[in-house]
Image 1 (cartoon, one colour):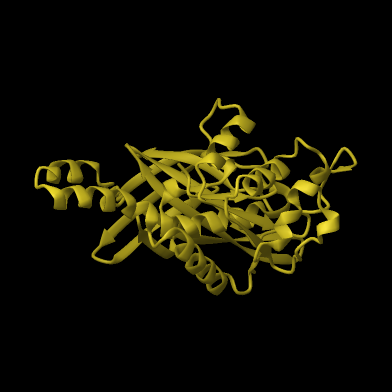
Image 2 (tube, one colour):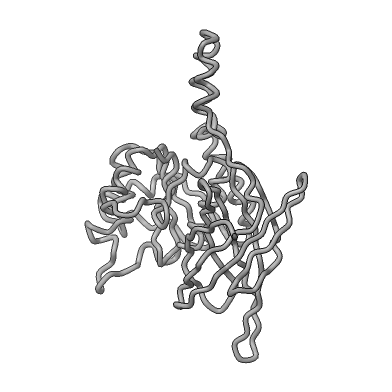
Length: 295
């Protein structure tokens, strides 16, 4: 079950939620961090699936951006609606005694208690942390340190080892079981891959990826809109390959550089690719797609 549950409002903090999920997965493992955009299996009833994930959570992060409090639906503030998913998530966590950490994004402020419905007011008494774009790396490192203190370092990766190691010390017969149940990280996804990607504006492209690793050096390319681009800021850790590429957009006389971020997790014979972009003329939502070997 998920250990860290990320609660966020999509039209308030979807971009930050995706980046934070990627950072936390590097430290705690992909199976120990939950965010609804791509972690719910298809076909599950949404509220029931969220409640099941919350029941398995050891800690809930509540991402609060500039529109978290005042977001509306049909002219009514969403937090005032009993069926608002964000309200349901936070109220359930507070009511069940699950540790809740408010994460204030950039210049967002903690809402005053009198602006919240009664079941959310205990949130203002929880110690908040701030995460900003300007200080992202340092802020996330401090957050990870606080979570490790609460959950235990690398708990998701080590819990099975700790339990079975006790059995191993009790008797040599547990050796086979320990090795059989210890989580194995997937191999580096070397080779050439392809994916059909439909972007938020409606166009579909056949994107290609190529990765090579020699020792600690990783080189490769990832295409965007069908054009191959060198990968940068590459990291391979805990079974996740993350990197960036860049492209330039032009609107009239204005030029902007977009940063495309990818986090790739091998899944069987395919790759699960989480993609997000920032810095261009729009703010498209993060997306997830599958890549298969290029034949």
